[in-house]
Length: 226
Image (tube, rainbow, N blue to C red; front, side, top):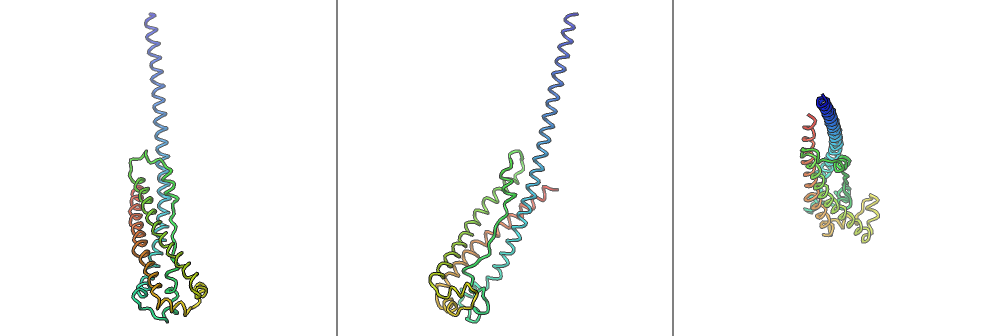
């Protein structure tokens, strides 16, 4: 009888332990499921931020590409020595090709959120792809953008220090002295050629790469919503 009581007690104790263990496992599973759900929602929110950022960036890129598409014939005319004095007077844009450029600032809110997010819990390769895209493309564009800025600064300083017509130029006044310089001095053509090279052969191709890869990422993010 005593052995039977001990057996019943042990069975009861084991049963209680099993129930406790099962309860713990269920609680852990529910907690893991809840954390996973939160992380998935957080990642979805980050994707939304990246989508908004990239769409805004693409709009800015379209504006810059449109600007330089319009300006391309002007560079060509100068480099081919086919601009007349009257054209310089009638089209101020010809005068400012070497001392101005449209700037671009990329939106990185979503990217910064993603770099702070623990992507190791996800087998999806898209977060890693997005980080690699931003890291590479923004680095390359910054290098090229710095070249544009340096060209602008060098030209600005050169004109300011060396030519009396500078005051008229920055005051948007037609300057016969500047026109004479632009038409007869190889220095101006060389500076236009430098700006053209940095813009059309270096900077714009990088913007094109950014745009193409950004569109692929937007498509992949859209697939995740389906």
